Length: 196
Image 1 (spheres, helix red, strand yellow):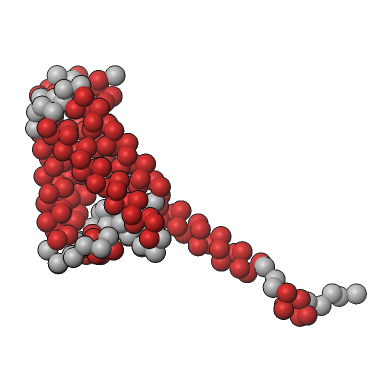
Image 2: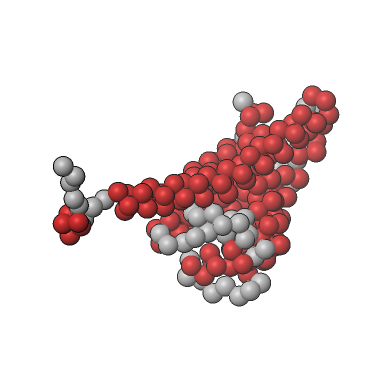
């Protein structure tokens, strides 16, 4: 069980690193999201948040003990709150979690962030670890399969976080448009002619 927890924790910390780097490279999306939350968002704020996020994720992967796990959990806890607020606004086109990538805040984001937070707290509860390097060396084949698992898991998580909300939003838009085309309002009844 500890191996599964460590794997899930490693993926959660890796996603923080990647999303932080994307915010540094393309901060406009997160800067808009910060403004939507009601905070002053100078141009550099998105990049600064990206630096902090990537640093927390990196420390979570490389640091030892409980503190890195608590910091990762805290980051995801803040994201849970931000996603709830953004979802309540309803008119937000992107949560800014991956920089410029347009991905509206969704229940999927909320579930991922909540699960990542719980995994990180669970990792802290079992005492954390000695860091990714020492842990990986203790796994079979000098950690190569474990590192491949982290890369695949992180890439899959990021793909789902960016694509699932966009597909769901597109599906809702198409359903709304289809419903509007197929409904006949009472004033349109006079134009309907039945052929004999």
